[in-house]
Length: 77
Length: 461
Image 1: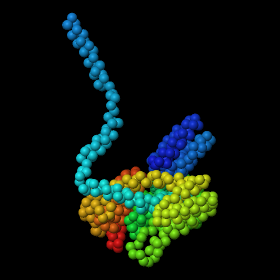
Image 2: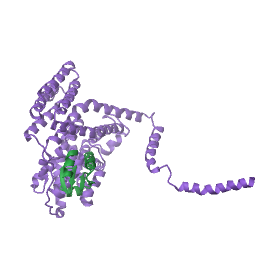
Image 3: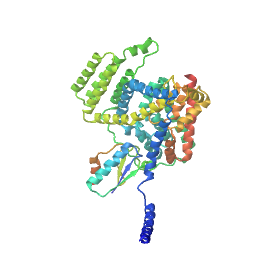
C-alpha cells in the first residue's frame, strides 16, 4: 500500500504526515508513507487545497487534517 | 643498561608514532559542521555587544522608539483590533464553504465569473499562506486557466481580512480601501494581460475529476453574512477613533461607540444561542459578568471588552461542534501571526522609529528615496516591495515607520500593492510552477501596475 501526504510544507501538512505515520505504525499494515511537496505534482492529483491524503492513488481527504481514526479506516479497507 | 633503556624507549617511540598517525586520520570527536553555525551566532552576538554603541544617542533613541512602538500596538491595537480580526478570520475559514468558491474556478466555469471570483476570493481562501500556492497551481493546471490563477495569486495575499483591517486601522482608511480595491482591480487586469500574452500556450485541460473539500456548512449563506456583519460591527465600533473635531456624525458615533459595541455583542450572543447551539443560560451569565465589569469600571472599557472576549472563548469552547473548530482555527491564526507581527513591530521601531521621530535610519534617506510622489519614488517602492519578503501583516508597521519618516502616500500604496503578493522566495516558487518567462512577465506587470496606482493615489491624497 502506498500513502501520499500532499502539502507544500505548512504546519498542518506536517501534522497530517505525523498522524498518518502514527496510524500506519499502530495498525501494523505494510505501507509506505510519502510526502509530496512539489506543487505541480499536487495539482496533478486535482487537489486544490492542502493538506491532502492519497491512498493508492485514491484521494481520501482534501483541505483538512484527518484524525487517526479516519486514516485507520482508509488503510484497513 | 642505559643503552637498552634508550633502545626500548626508541622502540616504544617507533611503535607509538604510527598509532598517533592513525588517530589523526580517524574521524575526530569534534563535528565542525554541527558547531560552526551556533558558534558563529554566539560570536556574532558577542561582537555586536562588544562594540555596542550604547553611548550613541541615535542607538539608545532607536531602542526606546522600538519599545514605545510595541507598547503603542499593545495598548491600542491588540485587544480591540487584532483579537476580533483573528476571530473573524477563524470564522471565515471554518464557516464558509471553500468548495462553493472553488467550483467557480474549475474548468467549466464561465470566464467573467471565474475572474471576478478569483480576484475577491482571497478574503475567503487565502487566509493561510499554505493554501495559496496549491490553489494557484490547481486553478492553472486543472481549473479555469492562467488568467484566473494569476488573478487569485495576486489578490489573495493583499485582500485577506486581517491585512485590510490592520492597514485601515493603522495607516488610515483611505490606504486600507485603496489597497483592497487596487488589489481586486489590478488582479483582474494582470490576469487578463497574462492570459493574452500567453494565449497560445494554454493547452487543453485534462478532464480529470477535481477533488474539492467537502462542504461542511451547517447554515444558509444569509445567516453567515449576518453573523460576519455583526462581528465586523463589533470590530468597527470598538476601534472607532476620536475625530479631530468634536462635531458631526463621526463624533456622535464616537461618543456612543461602547454602547454600539455592546449592542452588536448582544446580537452576537443571541446568534450564538440560535444558530450555534450555545446554551442560553451560559450566554446570559457571560453577559452579566461583562455588564457588571462595565458598571464597576466605567472609564476602563478595555476591562469589560477583555472579559467579553474571555467569556466568549469559554462559551464557544464548551459547546461541542463547529464552535470548537472556530476556536481552533482562530487560535491557529493568532499563534502563527502574533510572533511575526511582534518581531516586525520591534524591527520597524528600531529602524524607523514612531511617526514624528527617528530610528536608526535617518529620515532624510527615506524622504529622499520615496518622499513625494515622483515616478522614481513610486517605481523604487514597487521594486523594493516586489523583492522584499514581508511576513504576514508586518508590512503594516514597516510602512507606518516609512510614512512617519517622510515616505509619500503614493509610494506607500505602491509598496503595499507590490509587496505582499511577491517576494524573492515566492518568485522562485512561482517560477518552478510557471517557468521563467511567465514569472518575469508577471513580476514586471505587478511592478508597473503598482507604480501606476501609486502615482494615481499619490496625486489625489
